[in-house]
Length: 431
Image (tube, rainbow, N blue to C red; front, side):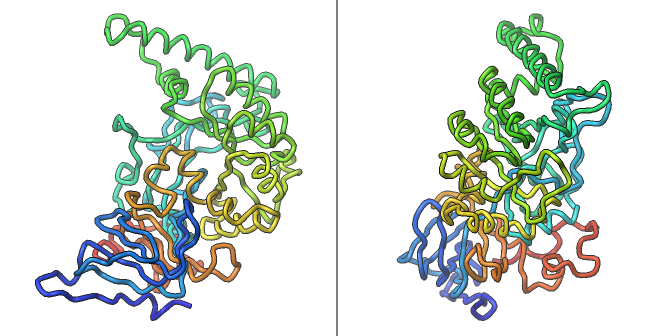
């Protein structure tokens, strides 16, 4: 049970400000992910970073102390596949449009961001749809306060906006010309485009910075060159086992990093997936249907992939699974036989690693961003509620705030597009 509504107990120290930059959360059960659970633990944060995790953590004088006795604290959830923010990519003019950027389509005031925070999600990969062989560049975002998509975006080491490339095969990306009519033609078009990208990249390398020798700029091939160089991960929508094998052949041929998304028939090729070291972003739904190639979707995909040694994350594909109900998906995996330890990792550290942000988020460790969720109980219990969500040491969701509770529970008008940024909800001044 929540202790005194998580009442903040401020330790007043002479000559210290009432609200210090250091905050200690005491009494909760901590789930670090990289280590064993810690009962009656202390999570210490300072200036947006975690500086201490354990049972015997010294609390500095002047720190703000928040009593979370009876609660459970886990790392912020990382969603590898979301469509919040009115996100969009390519149009119907052609089957391959890797040059399109979802960066240019996202509405940060979309209510989906608030729904995600209400579900404990603190980082997400925002993706275009799967109606193309290549539908565009994804973006990795931190669900902190922000007035623009740039304010939410993760950055690569070179300063560029971080993200992957969305690709798809199977039924979705087939159609009337100019779209491919068969699976074989789909793969052939993709292969030809990557060959062209290899040639483009070789010309760039030979030019060695000489503007006169550089090839004419091609935004599509430039994007695929980033894939070939390992700067951009391929997020591949795929369901049937034969489509999965096609992706693995392309991965082997061109050497790109790939995350397999959905993978309804993962159980049929689990060993092959593990051997190829391809990550899996899995979806489990409790009311399957709507697509013939997903007819063999099994909750048992989760434990079967775990047993095979594959790297597994879960994703919402929001609205396919509402962000507010994301914890339930991992619980379904546990019910089907996945270990709770792996299921927790599949919501946190594993997706962070897949998105190349595992050095910053995904576990409760000193030096990482202070992204975490306070729960009313164990994460995979149907009775558990997300009480608070914190991003970089700032509270961005609180179930005790009426507007937030309305978002969490779907009150009248709660899911309508917001007219003001989350920044103006007043959390920026809380500790």
